[in-house]
Image (cartoon, rainbow, N blue to C red; front, top):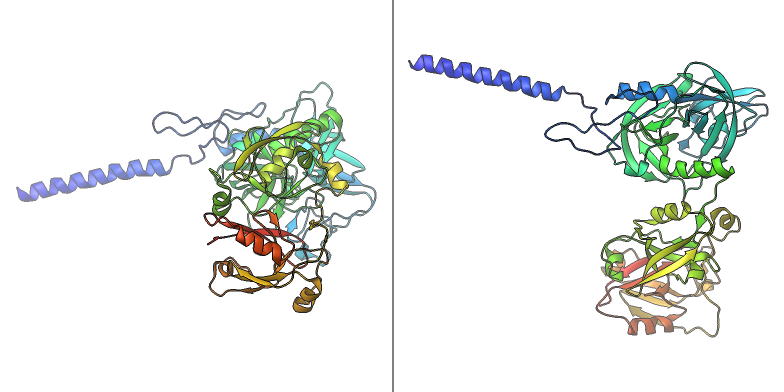
Length: 527
């Protein structure tokens, strides 16, 4: 009896194990590509998030193959024919090898040639990618794909060839808008999505013509958002990129980066090569491209707003939040307000924190630059700022960013004020540091470097071992130019500032070097 019971128990266990294994196996082998980047509508129960392919003529599938099949119809090959020799700029480490190499292939890495700059012979044809955005022949691509072209030829999915005209380019973000005339033929095109909805980890698909292999499809995830990459001719502060590990190879430039709803979220632009890097590609955010595209199609050129401020590189962290008594870590700290610029005329000053623009919170420096650059010159923006613990509203009328940069308004030199009398000499010790009035001759003798003769402040000559100042990285030779936003000219100003400190809150020191090429803020306990 006992043997029979044991045998039945064993059979039951085996049966349950088999059933459980079948269930687990079925679960693990379900299609894994079932995510939506556009419509985050979660179905009831255990059903996955789904999406619709939005490409013209596309399928209603939810996997990579359906999206790629539909989207590839609108991806084009762009051939750039140049009659004259020219050389493409390169940036160390960041390679945009969208054109061919002198040996006749599509492209090669710089390590394969002692001279990494491509050389173009008379009549040389180079190629990249692009994609249709309307049924009447408008195309988006990269500026570097079409630069210096004497003739542009577009090859469609069916092999037909068309000459293209350049509607306009925006080198600042590496964008080009092209146009072909296909007569009465209605062309397949892609819908533009919303890149601001992307999240790190979402699936994306890159399509292009790498190494002249037409409509190659690669898949990966969004690795990072709002990346700033130093590329030739682009505006580092304006151009914002999606980082992805979907392979972007030579010749992919100008092709679409698609979300899982089939819409374009980016324009494949650059890759990072060397130093062991792999799977680091960059695509221009489509939100930014759309704004520029609309201006290029309407006027043939792009204008961007400019506020006239230089922001401190330091993010609004816990120390800044505590010092300014902020409810959160949103905002940017102003270092310089350009004299006569929009911010200056609006009443902003150095040390202000810009919290929002037209009610939209500003997370960081890139967020402010991007938002202001998306506005048109002449527009008035409402700025919420924090000054001396108080919230203020200021209105600024923007000017043209291009004009401002050309007139060198964006990076004025640090101003230290006039020498309006004798400077007080001597030494003073407080906050764990000993200071003396800055003297350019002494600084040159002590530190053997090129120093500023216009700088006013107090030089740190000693840092107490084990003090908070030492922990924060202060060191001899640095110059304190302001305390709690109050300018420091000499040791007398320093002593008065120390006497007036609020011992119940941190003290903010503005520090620069003897060369006065920039400044940073250091926060110390006032006790």
